[in-house]
Length: 346
Image 1 (tube, rainbow, N blue to C red):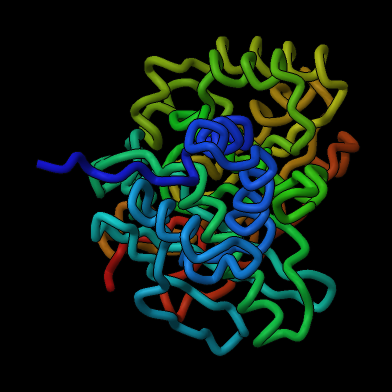
Image 2: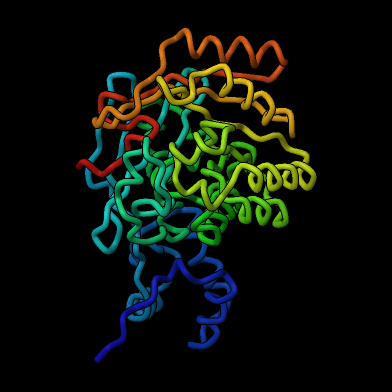
């Protein structure tokens, strides 16, 4: 009985070099294969045209390339593109291309389903089936870059880890994918164009700081009052605002980089003066900016977008305290591609 073939993209360049050495070939073949896999993004051994047929057959006998396939693609009236991405084991995740005049952004997934239980998010209603591998995250970016060039005539400029899943609950694979994305041997993107968004896992935020990452950090905050945050995001009972504050102070001390707080204002939940004042206090701990996000309903009516007067109250107060604030309007709502809507309806 033959054992299951290993995914060749799980090997480092050094391991590929060692493989070729073990079969009596030249180690530099490993460099060539590595370039085909990552820089050129090929999905078939037969496409490695500078490697002999015999060597390609040898690779085929030992390894597979478990690449993703865009199973279906939807285009929004505003230019947003949503991909239903089929993984090698048949599971599906979603990723989104978000275009603006100045840039195109890939919103990528890091888990099939999600580890956490944010009540306002459609993805959290899917149980976490597994973490994505580094190559599966990488492939989402490659696919969206191709779509950016095809539909918007420009290469992908930014990446946000705001799709399905909690990135910091798939820490190792997310960081490995970013290493490949930013490497000159991969896509060569600047880490300054990448943002990892977390719901707030204090221990892992500290680990990010210790690991000296160069990308940006965003935190889904939504309330700076513990009881309210627990109502919105029940896991916050374990990851308290006190612990989150401490981890963010540690982040800033280590990296000297500000954090973005993502914040949705809901009617009757966090639209009070008390909620605004609590956010202002939280924002004073470290340099930050607040990104107020439009809410995208997920059908059950428990959460409703607050009226503009409530959002204006937040903006006016934050500006009065000189805390940078922006309002992000949702894109791709007509194809369920907006923030919080990714739920594999396809």
